[in-house]
Image (cartoon, rainbow, N blue to C red; front, side, top):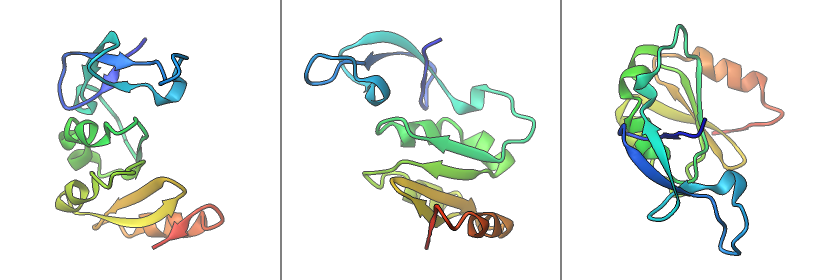
Length: 131
């Protein structure tokens, strides 16, 4: 089932062709041209106990976060996010998150009120660059 995470529930276009005309695979993204695909919010789903939210969705991470505000505030998960443009940091800081570590290309944010997440990251120090 194809779907896109966003801040709206609507039909969007997903471009799945690279500039060479071949299938873009994991680099498909929301664009002006492409296949019609439903978008949905993280808040549309029910979670019993959400501990980690990992987003790597080709530049559409901020809209996806905005579509998950209620869920993020309720569960306060560790957020792992590819944010090459640094578009999400201010949003997460306003939600009382702090960047605590880095995996190559993935920023790791934790809610400021959960210092135990820092301990968890410290235990993974063989793959993580701590900040």
